[in-house]
Length: 346
Ligand SMILES: NC(=O)c1ccc[n+]([C@@H]2O[C@H](COP(=O)([O-])OP(=O)(O)OC[C@H]3O[C@@H](n4cnc5c(N)ncnc54)[C@H](O)[C@@H]3O)[C@@H](O)[C@H]2O)c1
Image (cartoon, rainbow, N blue to C red):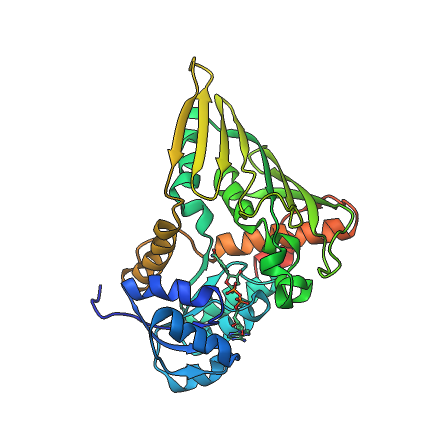
């Protein structure tokens, strides 16, 4: 274990990069940034109050600045290229969700990091936020999850109606825009997914080249089943996790209702006469981002097992890629793993 602060580069300084840099700076030191957009680089300076060496692309940064790790907070379609370049340069990689747009890209990132013997973590904060983590924990009392019904309806268009968020080649389709966090949380609840089926609804907003309303059904190796309906053209709700899941367990049930200012959880075991009610006034974002950043640093420094690795990122991309493909084929049921040949390279 070393006390020396790890040196990080942040690649991508749009909306999320400066936010995550603040958490990194609590446990490490952000020493350089890259972003092809001068406005975004300026935005980083204004948001964080830092003035760091800034580059137009990751390779220049890797060639010129001595860093231990990179945090990738750029558009999804750029993640693979930056991660592989960082691994080749011997740098550890923290990558934001979605890990990439396809499973083969994810495996390329994994193999590059394995070969370079560097860490690779993908940020999936939802399962780490205490209100959502509480549902994972409640299984100890309520028994195995049998079924989840979940919905994420909100109006994404003010935020994601242009640029890379609107094209499948750049963002990966519907679920990476809305649903990715729930897919990961469902995996935390139920384990590995074995089949995926998705159906698109008629399109409302032609600016997206993928379904703006989508139904997804999942079956898990445990036998559990889940549905997720997402829509980004629902004007009544503005909060991206609006809707919230209902969960059937072997010995009880949970109902989770998220709102902008608080999250309400109601649960009851079959032996209880009354339901239990828990309100979370803190949505838990700070806790989750701190855990991701802190665990990644500790994993590098002393090998402490982290809350997440690349595995969660890759399995989520697998579900999202399968859902897009199934929706294109009007509901074909697809079995996972989606690319069995890539699971065990020779
Ligand atoms: N964990 C979370 O809760 C969370 C929240 C928001 C975004 N994200 C993820 O963070 C990433 C960025 O999202 P955003 O909302 O900040 O997007 P954004 O469009 O606001 O910002 C992306 C930035 O990356 C820059 N960029 C483009 N190509 C690049 C490259 N090759 N190298 C470096 N920078 C490049 C763009 O110029 C832009 O400034 C996405 O993967 C997104 O899914 C995660």
